[in-house]
Amino acid sequence: MSDADTPTDAEPSHDHEHHGHEGPGYATPQAALEEGEREELAYVMSLYTGTDIDEPDFIAVVDLDPDSETYCEIVDRLEMPEKGDELHHFGWNACSSSCHVEGLERRHLIVPGQRSSRIHVVDTKDRRNPELVEVIEPEEVFEYDLSAPHTVHCVPEGKIIISMLGDADGELPGGFLELNHDFEIEGRWEPPGEIEMNYDYWYQPRQNVMVSTEWAAPKTYYPGFDLEDVEDGKYGRRIHFWDWENGTVEQTIDLGEEGQIPLEVRFLHTPESTHGFVGTALSSNIFHFWYDADAGEYRAEKAIDFEAREHEDWDMPVPGLTTDILISMDDRYLFGSNWLHGELWMYDISDPSNPRRADSLSVGGTFGEVQEVQGRELSAGPQMVQLSLDGERLYWTTSLFSTWDDQFYPEEAEKGSVMLKADVDPRNGTLELDEDFLVDWGECPNGPARAHEIRWPDGDCTSDVWQ
Image 1 (cartoon, rainbow, N blue to C red):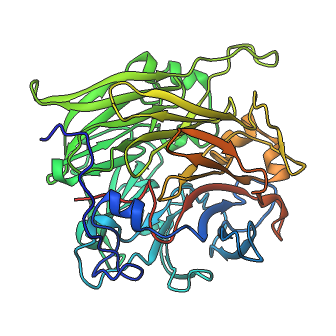
Image 2: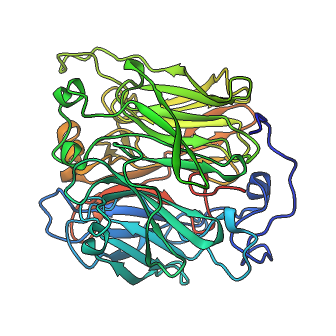
């Protein structure tokens, strides 16, 4: 395995429709940064699950073109066929890892229901008016003793792997479900029993490695958060390193008391690198991990610590609750959100072993300095984040998970989520809130809705992987 940590020089990209390529995506991360077009639309997971509104969840299509008459508006809503899915994370059928595959398009979104275990396939050929074309029913998923789909990654040659957080009964262990390019279940990706808890994952095929994280059994986190469950060991604190080709765990690292609930995990984009980061939600720390060639194994150490803060309404210090992270395409900056504190942050990771704080914004949440935008009160803190390919615009939404939202930000069910934006200056490492940008899920036709993960039609910093 290589221990390189600097991106390669840019090469000609291989995107299909917009860049004259055979397959979907870009030849290198640098090509994505330099040649990718500005995002004009966003697909956003939107849900009524967990609210008093008896309607199905939907995919919101948001206009992000500042020259458009419908800028900052939801221009289409694709409703799911059933209620109660809890749309959460989703991904593409193909990305830059398959940019060499002729005829393959980044066109279909794989959209799981976290609570229902129903998996939807959405065709985005008409980008502003996506169409539901296929549904994998829960019973088909349960046959493989899996449930609660979470992270969706396209893998080389057009296959799709979905992390599954529970067994068919919502207990442990979880695992991974594999779909083929025709969106049929191929089976489990891994031999059953390799792990107990599961959550997010990322892979580096050039290093023959995948890393996965841990949340808890669906039956543990579905009802809401209970600190006693942490004390009883029902929440994870380990990360697992897999043999990518064989689908077997080669190494597990216990992050300890300072690594409680490791959620989002990212390798650097450059495929030569073995460096990466994982955010631990409850401990509110960021761990850096890397392959130690001399020792022949991966190492992990705490690199960033967000301290808990006192609040008069809490009988304990309030953790930041670090719920999402991403890395810019040039591997220079790490961005993330502290949902309870109401903080968006940005660190320079040019030296991955020594992250340096660049800037932050205090917006919404329990302590945010900015508590309204355009007169709209913010009912929750920054949660899911997405960055433009050129690294100059950072967007975020505010819903975490329906029952957890109700515990910590009950007003959001009444007012709905928002999507906000910050302008990023990558040269100077600064963030500035764009107060002219606001997308309001409180104004949905059926009533206020919650908003979660964000995707761009041409790929983004959290869905593209390179071989």
